[in-house]
Image 1 (cartoon, rainbow, N blue to C red):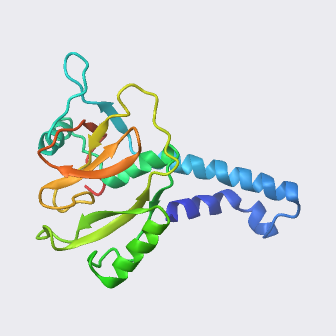
Image 2: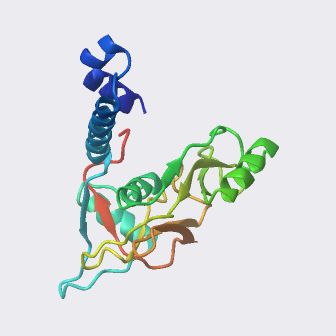
Length: 212
């Protein structure tokens, strides 16, 4: 959000800041169009650089366990997408996408968080959970963010409607428990949880995980 705000300030000055407000309907509409275009450009730059889908020698999509998916990306010096990276990609395809929690450091069982979860669910947003610490397994989960796939338009590209693993390391922005992780459904834009031993597709993001 800081990046977007800074970009807009840079775009609007000095002309608009000098005027403070647009002076006509046409001028306001032009300003709005310019702002929307600039926001789309900023958002496009924020979309993670997804690589190609992992396939076997015959061109078929490889379905791997969560650990094998992780190693496949690491062998390429890339990383398995986080749930947030999948959500950003889905947002670029029309999904309502991400809304942030007010309580990132409170357990999901806290009354404030439970009330927020119910409120968000009523508007179509589901909580995406994360662990709070290295020691966390099943009993210290928090909401990482809320996500809605509403409006998602599936891609036409071959294979992109498959289901793919998200990163399931610990601690991570995608792990649900000690033995489950989120999977992204490319046909629906949804995120759902599966056991690490289950087998799904692999699509890496270029480079190391954010922050490393």
